[in-house]
Length: 139
Image (tube, rainbow, N blue to C red; front, side, top):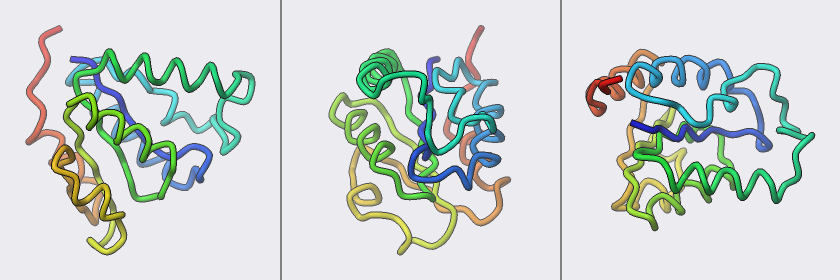
């Protein structure tokens, strides 16, 4: 299984530790194409050595090749919203994980029929959602 993990980069890196735990957990289920999102060395400037066009084209290629999108949506991000919308348009399943209450998430994500949204308080709850929703991948 190929998994596309989406999390905020340029909109803020406050949740990078959460991303790292989620990505490491997802790796037991398949290949995470966007592991870099969980790297502490990646700043809000993103991959500044790459052009925006390169990042756009590469990420859309990864989205086309993925079986599932898992998005941590606690930090509002235009990029993550774009990734989710692209996945929904391409009929790729999306799991959105949001820390906090239901009012903290855009209705365009929470109300999308192509997105399964889960709210959590503790990170262990988000990991449990992943375990309940993803089959163990055969490697």
